[in-house]
Amino acid sequence: MDDKQVQYIPFHAINEFMLNDYRLHVIQSVMGSLNGLSGERRSSINNLVKRHVQVAGFRNSLQAPAGIKARASVTAFERRPEFAAQVLQAWSELNADLRQKVFDFLTARGWKLLPPEADRSKLPGFMVEWPEGETYDVLDEAFAQMFPDFKCEVNDLRLMIVWLANRLPYDMYSGEDETDEEEN
Image (cartoon, rainbow, N blue to C red):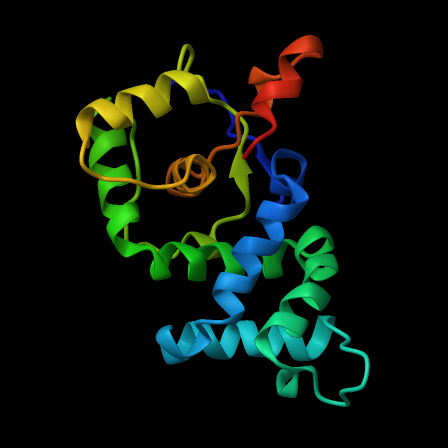
């Protein structure tokens, strides 16, 4: 291995790559399914909600309905790397079938990944190096060819790729290329 150092950017940097509606969708799916998570994950998210989320009309933000709590959580997701990491890890656990398929897909393409069930929220952030030539469009098409009968939203696929790879396509974007690649 050479002497290159791995660069990380905080987990909340993912907000630069997510559409607002999709970010809210991810947070809502997690907040609406907290009971489907492990006790440890649920506890981590609840503790972060208590500390960083203010819901108007509720002394305890945890008592708010999931949809209202999710909308109030957007700011914490945008500003707090630990909050973004816990929500994304929970989202990946709630989408275990997609997670396994994306893991199989990326490893078949030669990507080096942690096991799918690894808790990526404990990592320092996202790496910024992205495999050359692996654009979202290339990955979308190759995934559809590998799993022709599996249907999922393109944003879900792209987010799972980013999360499992623990990489943001940070250096893929420059100038004009940004507009249509921001969908994740």
